[in-house]
Length: 327
Image (cartoon, rainbow, N blue to C red; front, side, top):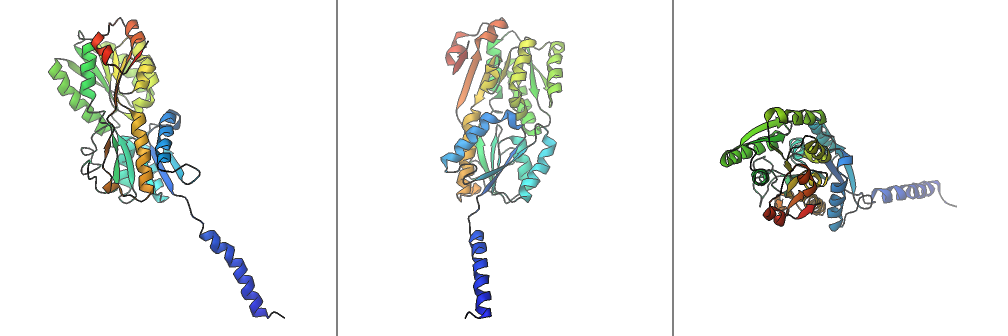
């Protein structure tokens, strides 16, 4: 006959075994994804981010989870969203816009952060150097801010008679706005152009900025580097057609939606690299040891249909240099 003590021991062991086994089951890492945009405006970029992750062997829902935090163009919310991700102790934070990475950097000095920015990450205080980032941040840069003077040159080549040019910036992204304005003021002086700065951080303010173009007698418009403007590419393109203003922006989506020209780094390639770096950090690499990557692919896109509607004859050499001509 089994003694009572032996029975209790056996019963306790039988009960404890599945609990112990459950505790030993591996948990999947969690990525915190912090963005200043709205999810509906970031669908193509998310596809390329997931593609970069998959190149490192990570598939969402299978061996990695993603906690999304979207500010939906309200940059003032990014600090609390970043703090929430930190409180959840995510394994790594992917912050593929400049306002988002600045908020993430303030929120944690220990959780790895992978960024994407169109400006200089050293000037922004994100890393000590491109080759040896140091600290807990690394990422991808395409230096779209640095390409702003080149966009102004392209615009001047297309509309050489326009002596007054406007630039649209988002004042709620001061690092990008100030760098863009500084570089363009210098380039405008070199070209003998008068530059007016227009501010917009909401959809209604964008409308108001375009209404002001006629009063300024601006003959052309350059749209500054900012994630909020990227998500408003279609709206911006339609407004340039409505107001009959030749304009240039950084990404193809603008030209595809009816804007005259786009010139800048490929966001698709850059966000894929953010996914790759996020995966490498999940595998154990340290941000301090991962050099900041520069996405060097630059694209020039021209919409000839819009040029015709605006009464502009595009220079043949410029058409020849274009990566894509939309007709």
